[in-house]
Length: 327
Image (cartoon, rainbow, N blue to C red; front, side, top):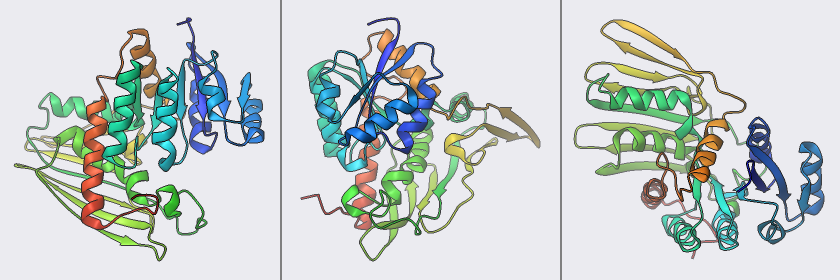
């Protein structure tokens, strides 16, 4: 691999734009190609970021020698097929969360990565956010004692979006759970692990899209109260409460610039401003893994993605969340 790691972008939308802006901040990254099923769209993206190769099909990018690793930023329902195509072409893959619409899809992607002996990671950027990392470190160090309660939410108003939008079109795996509910679920999993029991309830749009979901994760000695929704805003401050103190990750916690520790009547602030749009830390982890010839990240492993997919499957089953393209 050359000194610079050469990236290909698949699905040049809003998230890919933010991600590519952060790639441009990395001295060891080169944005070498972009692909869309619409060549004109790919070319516009290439012009904006001075990308040398623009392709009107994904296969052209996957078969290009110009690219080492592919960033998949398509709608959720395309993640599995696109990621597996890239992996089968021998490309490393960073796929935007959720890695798959179901655990079965994630299993297929993981199997393809292993079969082709290439690096693959789910793009759950919050795992690498400095404030989330700090909170995890404080918990692991025993600073707040035994964690007994966790609260995390993620909500914004989206009912003014078009019914053909990614958030409200069931054919694109719409709804709050897979798009933003994955964040509170991830935090509970990161801090407390797999729950022993899950309780959950959803409300739905007339077209079948899940609009809001409340979740209770039950553990032997702890509980996590989680929420995601598209019908209103929420505070989006995460709270991790232990026997000796509390950690608050400031709004919006999944992309926080700071967190605080409250213990023994004292408050300690940790200012950890993000670089760029917040993808820098995720990209750094990918680069470190590639340079070390790792096939997965220790911080967000294949098993972590499988576990998150299993939790999402369980909630979907309990709430009756289904998509038209599923058998």
